[in-house]
Length: 345
Ligand SMILES: [Zn+2]
Image (cartoon, rainbow, N blue to C red; front, side, top):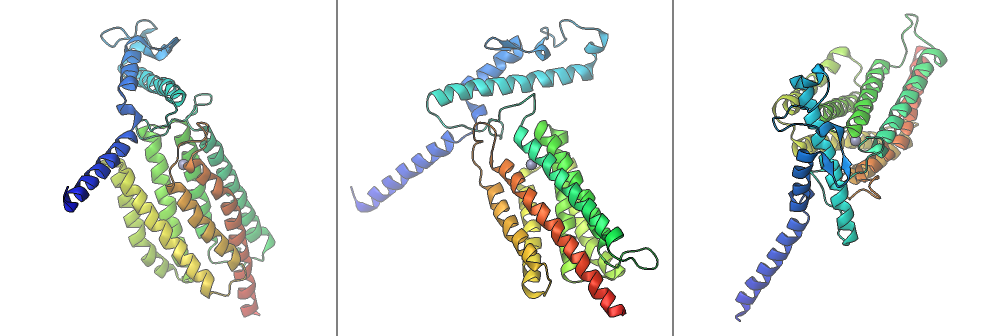
């Protein structure tokens, strides 16, 4: 064979190999055995010897038995929908068991790794970690509240000397809101819970970007604050509306979130580098930890034992980071208050 022919042949084999690899990594829901199982299950209501209440339909889609309210169209749709998710889940578990016996690696089904349910909760580890994150956020917020209103001196008009109190309150509320929907979403993944989780996460990320700009550039004037946040709020609102009412585009959302996250990490890193803030080492740790956590979130691997995946690990790393973050916020409040009081004297 001529050399260039041999090269093109090699290239072609490599390409075929790569294509086969991609095909092998294709979603498990394309697997004919899985497909057949789901189809069969939706008709009979059973996978193997397991049968589900939700799947009792006659041939015209009406339930076989039950009182009048169970014949309502909306209720029926719910039931049918429940039947489908149950069928999909149990067919997936059965298929994955067969595959592991054959020595095959786990594959994704409908875009998600095969997780094992616990009491009907889809991703129990992620739910528990989201709840823990919420608790840590609440603790941080309360401790900040006590510090600024009870332990530090107040102005004559009962307001705090610290100029960012209100902004951190909003931050606390937005982050607790986002962890709440994260817990809900990981326990039951449907379109509505997904939209709520995505929307509240985007709102939080957009808000923390505004907060990073306002704090790092020491923006204390109300009018300037509004001027800086208005375009960002407009952008974030548009993005949330787009996700909810036009297209719940996962890839686009990841990009938008990544850009907003990287921007604020950069702002905090630079600020920690040039400012003489006494608690800047905490900022550094949060920035480095946040960067590592972001890397983890994008390093996709099948869940360990069907429970712990990269996303769950990411939710675990945010727990110590949140703790440290609120500690930095408290230090910042103390630092600003004492330096303002020195100026007054
Ligand atoms: Zn999550």
